[in-house]
Amino acid sequence: MEVVAEWFLRAASYGTVFLSSLAAMTLIAAAAPGLVGRERRAARSGMRRCFLWGVVFALNCVLLAAVLARIDGAVGNVLALTILVGLLVVSLAGLGAIATEVGHRVLLLADREAASDLARLAVGTTVLFTVAVIPVFGWLVLTGAVLTGIGAFLDVAVEDTRPTRRPEPLAARHEVRA
Amino acid sequence: MSSQQCDTLADLILEALELGRPGAVRAVVDDHSRGCATCARRAGTLRSMAAGLDPTPPVTDSGFVAKVLAEIRGVEDDSRSRLPPPWQVLGAIGLLVVLAAGVLSHHTPDADAPWHTKALTGFVDQALGFLGVLSAGLTGVWESVAPGKALPILAVCAALATVLNVAFAVGAWRRRKQTVE
Image (cartoon, rainbow over all chains, first blue to last red; front, side):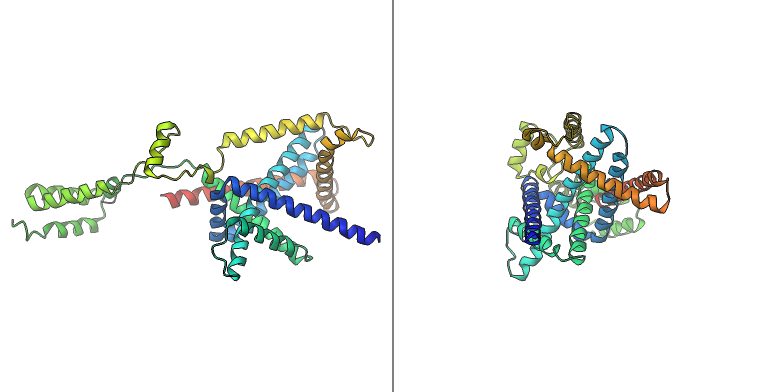
């Protein structure tokens, strides 16, 4: 009986994590729909690069948090918590884009090309979190999606920090080429 | 020179293009147009067409007039697709640090604390617990590899990861710059 109760508790906490993640990703997608679209493009155009950057960034955050947590006093703990919260926000923003892309491709299997972004996000998140129940393989899939999402988010973030340039007038461009 | 039979300009432009020198085409066209009324007319037409094809200047101001102009031109507002400016992100991080410091300074892990204190600081307990497990686990791994040197190794690893992270950011920055150019 205790075993059943423990499994039920685990399932409930996993469901809570799934629902809260989906809610957070929906919020991010609603706040910045264009951002999610650009993250999807970044992930599609350089999946390996995004994944590698995600791995490096996640390692960086975890190692920094671990080092800071060893410092005596509240300062180290506060900074470490801030880093972890930042990593969580970036992860959710990235995973939302990857889940939307996964949902888009899954819905294509059902000939639902014109599905809304919300439906894509919900389907993609459900698929990813359900796959993650499978030991090892599922964990790797979800981890890969999160890390690729982190990389895609960072790629877009770098693009946004660049100052936008006014396009040159066409006549001036002709002049330069000539 | 007959106005309908002048093909000189086309040949001159092709030759100037082959030179690949900046300003060569304009110089050739100007030189020839001075002595050829037909080509001067043609060049004038082409220049006015090019000027007419110029894109409308983007709205860089965020004031009322700029918003009205953007509305008239049908320019889409892309502010929702961009991340907030760095000062806002840094402000949010600062606020988070202050809040976390405030909660931690009043936080005492007491099992007999009233329920409202537990409700407020319970998440801090969980987060600190996770952080402690994470830090102890990583330190433990290195402690088993090199006893007594776990912290320096962790710090070096963190520094290396930071360098790699910055390298990725610089790479992305340069790639974007090349794309824009």
